[in-house]
Length: 396
Ligand SMILES: *Cc1c(COP(=O)(O)O)cnc(C)c1O
Image 1 (cartoon, rainbow, N blue to C red):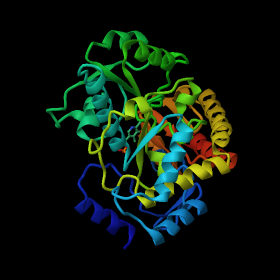
Image 2 (cartoon, rainbow, N blue to C red; image 1 turned 30 degrees about the vertical axis):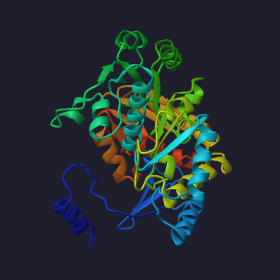
Image 3 (cartoon, helix red, strand yellow; image 1 turned 90 degrees about the horizontal axis):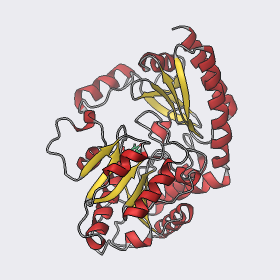
Image 4 (tube, helix red, strand yellow; image 1 turned 180 degrees about the vertical axis):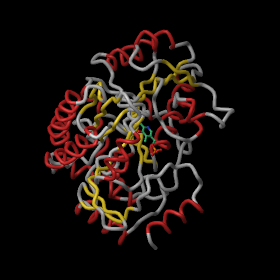
């Protein structure tokens, strides 16, 4: 099928919820993807912070190919060695105790919300309320879009589940004031991704942790975007000197194979009993093999260090562009390979011009250019993106 036919067929038959770019991708290699007509793109979006190893990474391809030839799926009625390895790996990197494997970010958060409520029912006299932050993003299921304190994701889906309240992000006083006798958990992204790469002050998350401890409230961190080495450590919370009660993961965990996870302390996880939660696909052998391969590659290829150093290099380059185009870029922010450039104009045209010139980035929150490339990119790739961005900004 040619490009136009493919686009037309998807538009004819797919529910009209996505605003897609007019390109048809066929394959990828390393940090590059190729469209149906053979055009090359440098991928600094990585499937929205998913392809942490880039495309067609040999170790990931080998791991899932091998697993597919043995056992793709068998349900959670049975044990598998790949799942045993994955949960052990996740416990080791998180500093927490027990894992549940799901299939997506929303599902991981949905499970974390259920676990927090269950814990509160058993230990805290029926507290049920969860506080989240404005401009957050936690997913598209009914509970997670309610947790997502942005009206544009909620409108038309009322009645929404009860028990959620919202505070401004990075405002500890507002959070203190919002905790009530019904509060069972606070759910936050350590750095807000979809909301515009919004950074916490250095001591905010520690203050949140202290507040939770004082009030007997659980701290749930949504590391679906920040986790898996994105910010230069396996989890962002490791840079803020805290450990949450529950952390959620997805995006980068399978390197592109759908998988999500929530990981909790024993104290919290033990409130789940047999039958309290479940998933047919969650943590199946194929997805588990992918998760293990990604974790092994992050370790063996030094990708945490790479995310830090190449991330700093990209940040410096963006700051140079800010100096050069102060009327267009007013701030560069983020950590590791999760960076944003705050624009004074909508980002859509810049993203489209970059795409024409063979560079994939995206714009989030309307006016923030977002850079979440594979964690194994090199400086030459950063140079390529900065050169294209420079040319695009110069033309405005
Ligand atoms: C992407 C994202 C989600 C939702 O993940 P899905 O896999 O799309 O359900 C939740 N939280 C954060 C922080 C995300 O970035």
